[in-house]
Amino acid sequence: MAKQYDILVRLLMIGDSGVGKTCMLCRFTEEGFIQPHLTTIGIDFKMKNMVLDDKRIKVQVWDTAGQERYNTITAQYFRRAQGIMVIYDITSETSFLNSQKWLRMVSENGCDDIEKLLVGNKSDAKSLRTVSREEGQKFADHHEMGFIETSAHSDTNIEEAFTVLVKQVMRKRKKSIDRQMANIRLYNTEDSIDLADESLINKDKSLCC
Ligand code: GTP
Image (cartoon, rainbow, N blue to C red; front, side, top):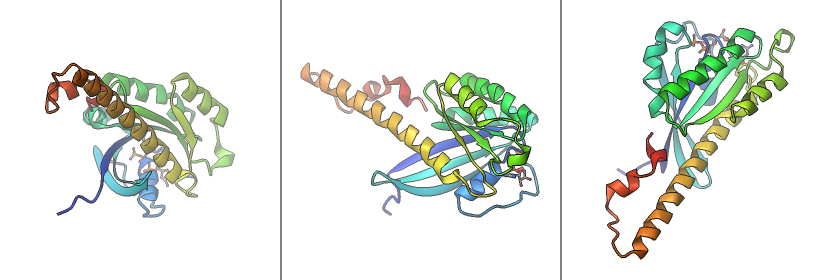
């Protein structure tokens, strides 16, 4: 059977329990705003197909449990992800401060070149806001990552947040392929290239995920 997509992109959502990861994912996969009855246990995933730059992309999004007792399970999925969303709740200072802890987990367990996006969710809850947009932006700038505020409740910027991260992953992937092609051309001029040589492809560390 013909493959129904050109590229598979694997994303992971992390952040404290209750920041709205599951609600964001349900919005993204067009199930609407679903009030979750239970906290996520361990890990769950959903798929969505997108078309970007004429490429059919299958986005696989892993929704992790924010509760600390599941950290060992979720950490095992970090290495498989190409992009990570670090999510906090703009009405919870603690969840924002804990973004630092989540980023540390990414650097300890993920690939070096993983793409990251900081997301401040629940932007609809204006009267309860305790983390300003500026604070979020400053934190993201400091960690050299993108930043966006979203609301799963009012469906604001949800599609945009996922699209931004997918685009970041695609850009990184393209750079890595271009680098490999340049390497291959370079070796080729030396008249000794074996294009099927796996070791050549694997020389590029950015393919580790
Ligand atoms: P864990 O599974 O425990 O890690 O939590 P989670 O991050 O997946 O949070 P979840 O999606 O279960 O949402 C937690 C609560 O936040 C629920 O009561 C949601 O209704 C609420 N919530 C989620 N997104 C929003 C939002 O954008 N705005 C508002 N006001 N509430 C939201």
